[in-house]
Amino acid sequence: MQRESRRLPPWLPRLLRFGITGLIATAIHIVVAVTLIAGLRVPPYVANPIAFLAATAFSYATNTLWSFASRMDRRTLRRYACVAAFGFLATTAIAAAAEAAGLDYRIGIALVIALVTPSTFALHSVWTYRAVR
Image 1 (cartoon, one colour):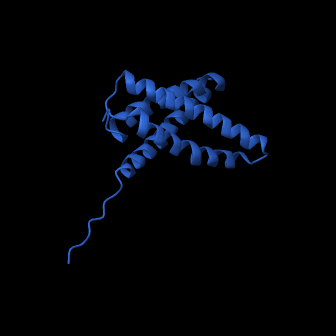
Image 2 (cartoon, helix red, strand yellow):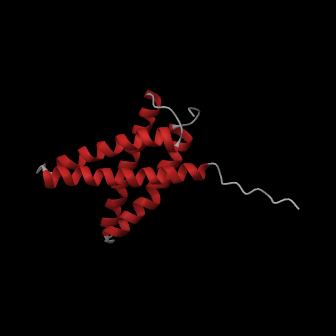
Image 3 (cartoon, rainbow, N blue to C red):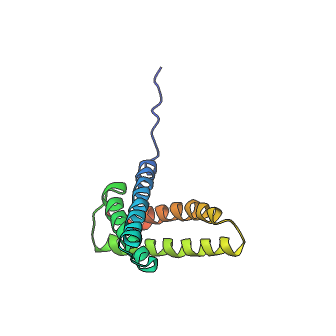
């Protein structure tokens, strides 16, 4: 009696690496923002964009090389930037809609995670890194 081999779907390891990368990028954003704001007295409206750029640079490099096992070049950078911009706009729109609906901010955060994360993963999978692997 042969056991049937159970294989993971090919996208699942990428999704897990993508999630880990996102958690680390979030930590980078927090550390950079808090260091600038609390340590160096940089205004939050200046510190957060700097932190966002630092986290996004880490995210691009790590997702390209590790999550999607691709190469860093102008094509993937341009596409990654487009998906990141989409994610930023979607996050802003979802948070604004949640606030306008009178929802608790934590529900807005949960909606952002539930909607934006899988959307950006899917866009990276089918567009950013398509035929580049």
